[in-house]
Length: 118
Image (tube, rainbow, N blue to C red):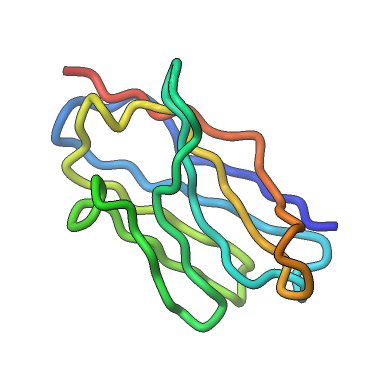
């Protein structure tokens, strides 16, 4: 099992920045990719950014050029640096990890709320 704990959410004005962190614990060796998803009120959860254990990244078009995902394997932590935030970035952000031995096994954090005021 893998446990994921997010931190770093909060209230920020349009154009501001926030950095989210997600610390993983437990069976770390089973993790392949880690990343971030978000869910805005009344909307489905959507991918924000992911990074594999080899460093390959994938971003949603809506955040390209504004958000940067990074990973510190020594600390078992993944980060999401969010710049130039917009009101439409307001959502609960969830950390995610998948299992390198079984693609059907996914791990989720409890989420952290990001609110961008206009």
